[in-house]
Every structure is written in structure tokens, then in C-alpha cells.
Image (tube, rainbow over all chains, first blue to last red; front, top):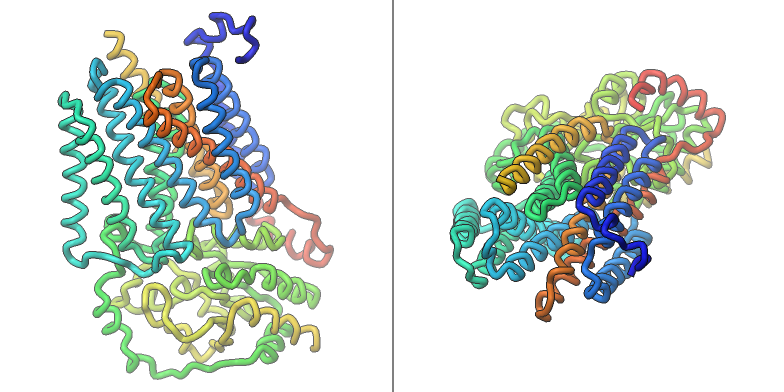
Length: 475
Length: 117
């Protein structure tokens, strides 16, 4: 019990509680404003954390005394899982971590709705609008929980990253599941107090979450993660309305807005509509092969050695590094930083060009490079980087593929035609570090590799970059 | 009457929060999108409050208790884990002292972009 003699009616007064909630969401907004730049971001995150602490304390002041045991148990369990996970997760595994966190958020939301249902004996004597928001939270929370778990499984490579689907009947299956979940919801809102129908609704939503994310390929993950983030936020906001809690409404809605903005940005950066991504797969596989048949490329691929690449880089004035998912997979960010440090010692000007969908989540590359101590001001966003390629001596592409493919600009028949790309082909020469000639996630041949300016250095990103650094030291 | 006014007030809060969220989040640069996502993970952990409020009403029933403890645990994972991992990431973005040679070049490049922060 918190200060028993002081726990007067004033601390449990609804207005006082609401004031604390308003302070809390004010701090959330102020904290997120801090994220507008790296210098203010750390403080912003801490301000938001203070807001959260206030919101939790305010709620605890009003929690029923009889249940402290359960609260302590839940918080202890959550802390025991959350703290080590947050401390130990590798930066390369951040997409999985965020997917998992989206999932548990959605899980909490649907479990809370479920207990509301049980406590009110199937929403008896509950205002209809509260029932509706609670049901919305249950459905969306369940979709988000299961969808996020599948996304986590794909990113962690427990589940194959390639699209898994029912083929052409996929959309019908999804639609049927959605209709079933909604029908169950309507039935409950209409006054049926049956828990089996509620559970049926949760199951349909769970299957829908699985069915929506399973067909989505690895390269579309940035969109999916952002979308699930939005879902969890919106379901939290709905819970806030059902529980008449302003802090929950504001926080949930802001997260919903954030997720929606990111989803939209990612989809734009891939020149794909969100419905098309949810519908799954990358166009028709056959069409892709037809568009990029082997005969189309008259050019040959020229491979190079670490020693030659080192010479090329050493005598350049300006080098732009283009990182992609391959760098993350190989954990090559520190090796890349060593290489660029060595180049900087030779007075080579180095910057990094980062495509918005490079990697598996928004901003993935930036976090990895920040971890490797790359100065923030060397990171260029796509629109700033593109005009600079024409005065770049060497573009060093490390594990990036589709985001550099000139077909997006030149070949109207290509499935990625219209997608904004990093125009590395404008630089004087290009070195591509890649494991093999296998096409990228989209299964599209990259014209860049046949460009006479391009040389390929085959190998694992980390060892290839380290070899170049070693060779550089000998020059 | 009272119910209706609560609903409209809450809907107003919802809509305004959506607009504010849109404006505030639009200012976050691409570079910070991963920390933004983990930070918003932490913030949606606020569903923890829902668990805390309802557990006070739960009375008896083992199953009710189990799902609420799980919900509280999930919310706590979000809050604690989310803020910690975001803090860890953002520390990496802090500007570090640069070697003089690189600093000179970096500055020149920076002028055009400085306005972003």
C-alpha cells in the first residue's frame, strides 16, 4: 500500500487522476518531439519514460488493494523478460525485437478486452459504444499479436522468409476470416453474452493475423512491421475509449499515427500500394522472369579481387557506401567502419547513402552504422545522396540489391519499375560486394551488375570488407 | 446524457491526438525511424494501465487472474524493454568527437543538412 495515511480521497479523485494522465500524455508528445534530431533524442525518450512512470503511478494509486500480488507478479514477470531482452539484443536483430514488442502489445490489448468481457458477464449493462471499442481492440489486438509473431518468426528465420500462401484463394480466405470475426463481434455487440462466440472471434482474428503476414516476403517486412505497429497503437487507443482513460487514448492514437506514417513512407519508397503488399508476393513470378530473361543482358559480369578493390578505393577522392540487408546479415557494420576510417586517413571523402527500405525495418541501416560509430553527418538520405553520385569516384555497394537496380528507372516492364532507387550507376565506378549472383528478394536481375563500370567482389560482406581493409594497409 | 458526453469527449481526444501525432511524427528524420518504432513500442505499452485498472475489479476466478497477469506482464515488457532498448540505440546516435581530418570534411558537407536537426 502506498502511504496509507496519505491515500486520502484526493489521491483517488477522478479529476486528480485525469490531471496526472494529461501530464503523462503531454510528456509523451514532448518526448516524441525530441526524436526530431539525434542530439535531443535521448532526452526525448527519457521524458516519455517519465510520462509513463507518472501514468503508471497514477493508476496504481487507484488500483484495488486486494490485487497487489497479481500486479507485482505481472510486473516482475514483464521486467524479468523485458530488461535482459532490451540489454542484450544485437542491433542487427532490432527488426525481430520490434516485431516481438508489437506482438506483446497487441497480446496485452486482446487479453484486456477478454477480461473486460468476462468481468461484465459478456458486456451486460455496458454501453454499446464501449462494447464496440472493446471488440475492435480485441480483433485488432489479436491480428497484431499473431501477425507480429509470424513477422518475428520470419525475421528470426524460424519460419521461411519467402512468401507462404494459399495462392489465388488467399484473398478469399482473408476476407472470409475477416467477415467471420466481424460477424462474431456484431453478435456480441447485439447482446449475445456467449463466451464461445467471443473466443471464436479471437480465433478468427488470430488466423487472419497469420494469413495476412505469412504470404509477405522478407523485402516487404519494413511495411509489415510499420503496419503492425499502427495496429497495436490503434487497438490501444480503442481500449482507452472502452476504459475511459485519456492517457491510453492519446498514447495509442499517436502510436497509430506513427505506424501509419511509416507504413506509408515505406510503401512509397517501394513504389507499391499497401493493399498490393498485403495481397502478398511480388507480382506474378512468371512475368518477372520473362521481363529479365538472360538473353536481355548482352554484358558480362566482371569480378574483382580485394586487392584491386583496395587500390580503386585508395585512389578515389570520393567514396559513397551503399549498405543493404546483406551488411546486416553479415554483421559487417564494424568492418565497414574500419574500412572507411582507413580511407579517411588517406583523405578520401566518405559518406553513406541509405535507401529508406534498405534492411528489414525503417531506419535499420542507420542504427547499425550508428552502432559502429559512423558520424551522423555522413549518413545521406536518398534524395540528398542521388545528386552526389555523379561526382563520386567509387560507389561501394555492400549487400544492397533491388534498391540500386537501374531497371526501376529504365525498364518499364520490370516489376520494380517506378520504385525510387539510389542511382549508383551515375558514379564513375561501382564495386558490388555480394555473396553470389543470386537475384535479390524480389527475384529480379540487377542490370547494375552488367554495367561496364561495375565490378563484383563475391563473398561474405564482413570478410570481403575486412580483406579490402587489410589490402589497403599494404598500399 | 452523461455517457454520450464521455463518448464525444473521448472521440475529440482521439481525433486531436491523431493530428498531433501526425505532425510530431512527420518531423522525425529517416535516420531515427528504428528508435522511433521501438519508442512507440514502449508508449503503446501503456495498455499496461488497462491491466492495472481491471485487475482491481477482477475479484475471483483463476482464469481471469491468469490472463490479466499475462496482460500486465506483456505491457511491462513493452514499457520497460521498449524504453531501455530505445535509450541504448539513441546513445549510439550521440555526436562523438571526430578525428580532425574527417571533421573538416564533415563540416563542409554538414552545412547543407544542418537545418534538418
